[in-house]
Image 1 (cartoon, rainbow, N blue to C red):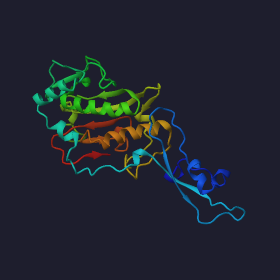
Image 2 (cartoon, helix red, strand yellow; image 1 turned 90 degrees about the horizontal axis):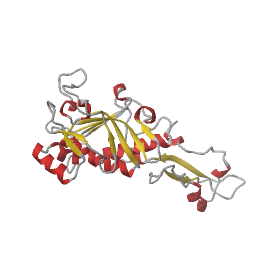
Image 3 (cartoon, helix red, strand yellow; image 1 turned 45 degrees about the horizontal axis):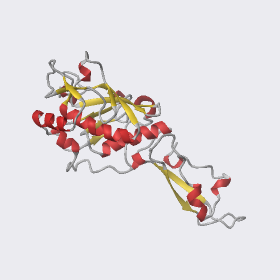
Image 4 (tube, rainbow, N blue to C red; image 1 turned 90 degrees about the vertical axis):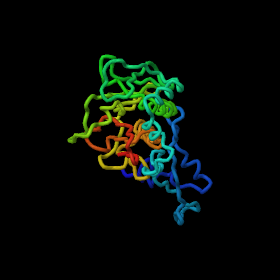
Length: 279
C-alpha cells in the first residue's frame, strides 16, 4: 500500500463530496483503541472544479501523516544529546547519578569482564517493568550508563502506555561486530536488544510481527513507511521513533537495518560516537 493510500476513501464514496465547511468533520481522524495514543493526522485539499451536478467542491484526502514521520534532528549535531552525557560518565559519576535518580537496580558482584559497573534491574523503572534474562544468565547484566538510558527510555515508553519492555540480552561477554574483530557494545554491557513492549490494555507490540518495514528503508522521518499499517504497527513505530528523537542512544538498529534484526531493535551507547545512527 502506498503512503498516499493510507486510510483514503474510495473516490466514488458519497462522503467524498462535501462543502468546505464539512471538510474538518469529514477528515476527523478515527479514535485510537488505546489511551493517549497520538492520533493519525490527515490533510486535505479542495478540488478546484466541482462535479457538474453539484454546487459543492470535492474534498480529496491526501496521504495520512503519522507521528513517526516527523523529521529527526541532524544526527551529526551532538549538542545536548543525553546519549553523549551518559556515555561519558565515569563509573563513580554514574553510580552517583543512579543513586540520585533512585534507579531500581542492584550490583552484580560476579565477574563481568568489560563492564565498568555491572547492574541488574531490581524492580520497575519509572513504573515500567524490564523483562530480562534471569539472575543466572549474564545477558541480564547492563552497565550503569545503559541503566540511566533505560530509565529515560522508560519515561517515554510510559507515555505510550507501555507497562513492560522485553529485553532479549544486554551483556554478551566478548561479543564482536559481525565479521569484524571490533568489540560490540554488548561486550561492555552498553547495548540492549528489545523484542517487545507490553501495553496497559493487555496487547503486546512485537518487533518481529508489528514493525512492518523494509530493509534499507528509513525507519523514521518523512520518508518512513509501513508495509501494512495497523494500530499496533503505528504504535510501535511511533514509540521507537520517539526514543530515537530523544537522542538517548548513539546507535539504533531496527528491522529495517538487516535480516539479523528482524525480531528486535538494538540500542547502544558509544563514548566515541561522532554522530547518531538510526537504521
